[in-house]
Image (cartoon, rainbow, N blue to C red; front, side, top):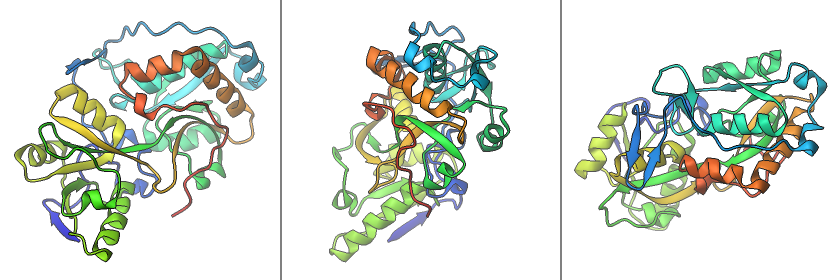
Length: 324
């Protein structure tokens, strides 16, 4: 394994923090470069204004009937969102209104249940205590389902957890989806993250098979990693797909050349997170499935460039990533 530590520490801004370990992709606030005030890109325009003109949603009587009395008593669904990483959630151009995919999902889910969404900006590290204490009735903040988290919380899945390989727009690299594809490549990755662990396993497999080693590159900020890729000092970046896709569509300088399950070789799910045993996760699952069925869910993902991470149906407490 060749390692180039241009700066020791966290990796490019598209990577997840070391503290999250193998549950990478869970903390958007630690991952993305700050979003521009507006975003128009090659074929994609993102609305970051406070006025969102969201898709209309019909109440699902079946889903609404599953909402526990303790949740629907005030007519609101209190949802914690971490607005620090576009396109998942970020502050709008007024610097105070959360917008993004997670916010749209929260608003649509609440409306499908006959409730009004009360979006609460929350530091990502604070959501577990907030849910356990009852401060938040749901968290929609790119939380990956793990078996350890399932001991304390219930989940209703709404997106696949994907990692993405991105290359310079004019790179000759067109496909990366297995170990041989990374042999001999110079790859920017986050130190201590799940994507690094995957890449280390692929590199070990390649060396066992006589293939060239990966050159691992680590950077402290997004600007440095972007310069390395664009100048040709690196071949690829490997990190959470959502934020990398947004950046690619915004600046048009990179292209996606491969998607990998966040829990490779296992699938990983992003889910609405709720208090253990209070019954709301079942209502959330039903509400999400009503949004999937009527097409609203697909429109929301397309709006934020996340169609590749869509699911066919929401699952209640899906298999989680094992404890590392």
